[in-house]
Length: 168
Image 1: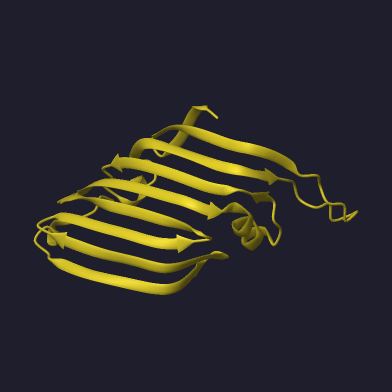
Image 2: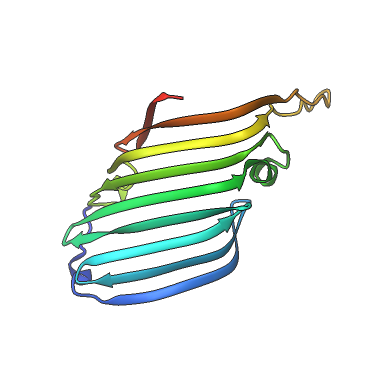
């Protein structure tokens, strides 16, 4: 069912939240700062956080219509230590290197079910010198060999919420 956002068009909201430590699905963020501004149907929600030795910056902004949100989203994820992330996620350092991720998209969802598919834009990621390896063989206890790399890079477009690339 479409949203009814008409009551928010004349609403004025301004606020901020700061969180020293935040955990989400085995991942750890620190120094999280976000704010919300909503006035005359225009909104902005910038967020920053430290993440495994790197810095995250995200911004969601746009305008509200009675039954639709016209939104622009950007994410810049710089310099996180991939080894520490995989260790927290899998209790094992399956990959290492410094990772950067960038996403810039816009869309106009009219209902919750359209949030993922309404957005299109550009994305990229790169991992500096590091390594990856598979999962340890539980039956033999044998550790897989490491494959080292100097860099991994990819970029592409997002259409209807799907990431596409021919540049990996």
